Image (cartoon, rainbow, N blue to C red; front, side):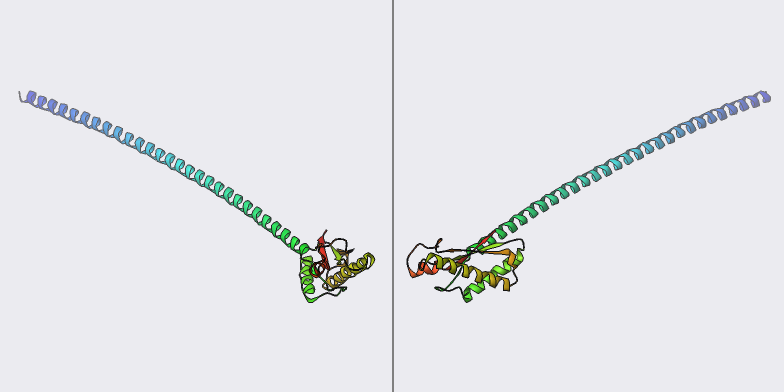
Length: 209
């Protein structure tokens, strides 16, 4: 009886140990499964994070590139526009200076080809303009009032034009850039028959060729 009781106890103990082992194995399998799932999720999260960073980086770089291109385009456009405006202003200023050169006549005393101080000051300005515009050539026109013969006035107009050319040459203007012509009394600036009209007609006029 004692042996039988001992065997039953041993059998019961074995069954208990077996269940314990099975339980431990089951718990271990569940733990491994959860750990594997956790690693997978972590890896997925890492991939997603990496993808998000790449996308954000690419988007940022793309935006910066677009902004840079736009900025460069804007700067180029502004520079081009600025250069065009400056060129236009320079052209307008040059045209104005040329018109002033041509419109600023010098005047003479009656029956004289001598240059008055006022005339010399004007010619100095004209010489400076010619030096700043070395490609320009000019015509100096000699004019007289209506008094005197046609032949005499043509000769007087020629002396006045030559007097101007000689003075400009002394100021450094090349003689090849200055051509002279006399119109005598043929092209009056003022058609009146007064002292004031005659004074205006005794002149040298300038034309830029």
